Length: 323
Image 1 (cartoon, rainbow, N blue to C red):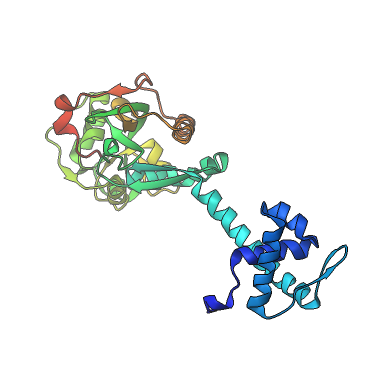
Image 2: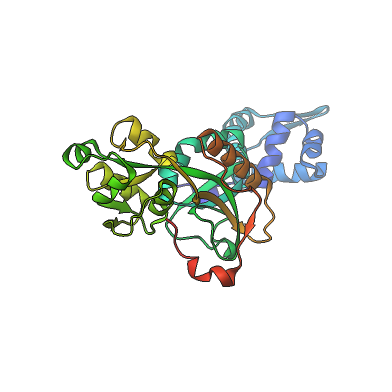
């Protein structure tokens, strides 16, 4: 590593570079917005530091010595590298960053594959994904936005429904070959029913098709990704969120066991933000883009799109997790 003592003062070095490139102290002074005498002083400082004469003063101006020409060629690359690095850092730091809290299942099965499209459309925006099962405290700025799934009863925030899921019952081919044939909705109660932290999906589907699952055997798992993995492994039936299971159905890991499709207000995707938070241009762009992506993916508008405000006192005990 070079010692600091080997380096001439940076301002003096800049003055030398400008004077040698422009072949004029006067033009160098104008470019650097300093006095001509200051350029002369800086060049003299570089000469003293290097112990080398850099310019020959002539009647009509200055002429760089051979040593100065060699030195100029070597340091110009360094100045160009510094300028490039500075421009890159400035561009990176000037990008507006959005922190988005979301469920791991939504990130893995939907958003991550589509995110490059948004970044290409909004090159001045950086998106930081925060996959978590817990509802981020957007009011305390833990995240700028949150994408949640459920009935929208989240305390102390503004939540806007982005669209309702289409719910179907799915299982593995192995399970369906080995177990009792499922011919009607009530038959699902004869199987182990896989669920996340809440019974939201099963309750919504059962209500839509008009059956009672109060006596069914449920196996509660943590994350919806795990629910899908367990279903694909033949451990039971699951409610498939069509947005999440498209690839599973396509490659045959899961199959739809009944034609019944439920669309319920209990099964909405919500865009959650802090109350009274003004959306930045980047947040608005992301929200608009996400809405288009979800509509194109087939989500059904189940509620008006206006922001929904939930009173913290009446919803406090339901402010924890969503599935």
